[in-house]
Each structure stands twice: as structure tokens, then as C-alpha cells.
Image (tube, rainbow, N blue to C red; front, side, top):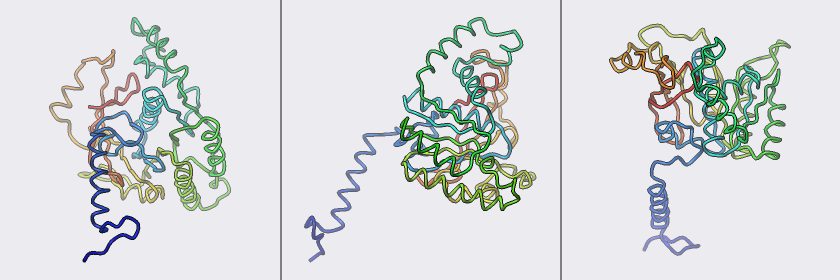
Length: 308
């Protein structure tokens, strides 16, 4: 005679099998839709199940090939396409600069051509449409001169309590804190900040996206130039606390172009854009699902990443 659960009267295996089948039915009903917030790139959403509550997604790269642009694209997707609220902490760009980039990107207008006096014929109309579209969207940009853990905790708490933010983006981790001014242990401070960010995501049960750089001294030699999870772990403690790690890299730097890549560099404009740069988003760590490479294309004239 098998053992029975005192609460249900069912054998333990049967109880868990029923729960597993019910969970499978729910997943089948959802099909490929993400459980968390959509990132805006379908394949990346499938791999990661979206930005999950209480979890940290790290986006890292060797230098700065577009982490801020990608983060702003994610913020725009969450606020404009999903109608949710985003808190964005910028330690590299002012709020005014980010909003200008967001406006032109949303309008799909080249800032460079506009500044040089050669805008597209309908550029002004597209900018006004983007302005009216984004006017009521909830993206709260904080651009403090310095941001330590205590200031971050206070600001996040205020954003959650007053505005009900659904996502926090930090751009970028290595610029937080100010211990270097006092000659303190910088590595220990970043470790404490990383642990504090994880605690915040758990406490408020909202996803965090954290941008991070990789130390230039770790750059590799041929034939393997692509960054890895080990490179991030050697650069910053945030890798230990991350639930998902995405490594952003320009494809043309790490591998020779294919025939398809060369074709995409031909002067075929997308909304007036000729500069299409191929990137790869490598999912190097994922507690929610698969790891692998997600191809992206960067439309450099209008400052947007799109699925390829």
C-alpha cells in the first residue's frame, strides 16, 4: 500500500503529476507568449520568457556598442507597447539627451541629418506624431550626478510607491557609488551594490535591467574575440546575482560577414536608414530557460535595435 498525503488523501506522486499537467496546460494556453514583460524582440522573449518579476537581467559588452540605445528601446517597448511604467537611472546621459534620442528613434528620424539641415521630407510630422504618442507614457528618468546604494533604494521605493513602476533600468552599474574618491575598496562597494540591487528586485517583485561594461584589460585575442560569462564574472560581481546575462556584440567584429550580411549593408534604406549593423545578443546565463544567440540589427541613423 502506497503512502498518502495527510491533507489530500492522494499518493504524493499523483498529487505532483496533477500539478505538473495543470502547469503544462497553462503553458500550452500561453503558447510562445512571454510570462514576464516583453523585451520587444520575439526570439529573445521566447528564450528568456521576458523580464520576470523579482529577477535581474544584465546586458554587458566590451565597450559601448549600443547598450544605452538597447536599454531605451526596451523602456520604450514596456511603456509604449505594453502601457506600463519604467524607472530609468542614467549615470552616463542627461535626461534631456535620452528623451531627445527616444523622440527621434520613435519617429524613425535621423538626428544627424536633422542637425545638418537635411531631414527627410516628412520628418517634422513624424516627430510630432512620436511626441503625441510618448507624451502620456510613463518613463521616469533619473540622472543624478552620483548614485549610491542608499540613494537607489530610496528612489526605487519612491517610484514604486508613487508611480507603481513595473521595471527598473540602471545605466550603468560601474558608475554607481563614489568610494573611489575616498580611496576605498571599489570592488567591495560594487559587490554591495550588486547584492542591494538583487534585494530590491526581490523586495518589490519587479524586474531590473542592469547595464554593465567589461574590463578592457580582459579583451581577447584572435581567434576568440567574443565575450563570455567568465569575462563578466571577472569584471563585476553582478554576474553572481543575475538571473539572465545577455552579452551584446557586433557580429562584424567577432566573425567575417556572410553573404546575407553583405547584402544587408547595401544601400537599401529602412525609413531612410542605410547603416544597418549586425549584432548578436548572446544569452550566456538563463535561470528561466534557454541559452543561445539572438541576431539583432542596429539601425544606426535612427538609433534603434530591431529583430533580424
